Image 1 (cartoon, helix red, strand yellow):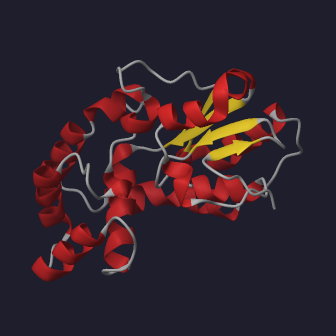
Image 2: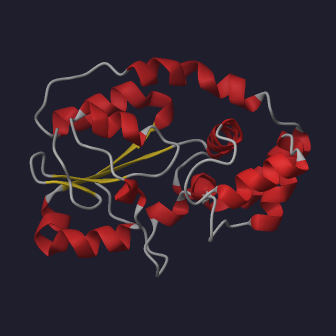
Length: 206
């Protein structure tokens, strides 16, 4: 397994992977035999600085995105199931368990905590990883989608000159959309759409 000392800059595969939380990025790097690191969620600007000009402009730059509605539910389910464990999410988890937040109540809570700058990594907008600090878009070579995870991972493998792969996580992703959408009512969907409006635009989920 390849160890990467910082974000996923793989010299072996000539790959730079920017990991947006809750988009199956761990499954992707595991498929390539790359050790996962907590620093994989770094901002592209920090990754660009670490990689240097030659690698940033010469390696294949990849990320994966996800429908903001299902990503929000996935993040909520994950953090509720984790209780008060974990790093960087303790405030949200403690509040959720102390107040007893169900999903509609958590959506209202999210409005107050938006945009989760101090904690709530999994709830931060995907636009954080799709743009530089000046607002310009990151020049990715390939942006995959969680909703077609297996086919898009295979596309990346082919771009890297590798054979295809089957991901167990990918088969699960096919049925998750309807399950996650069942948590919404008209009001909560409207709120989350408003909070993540930029994600819908940049990631093409209009």
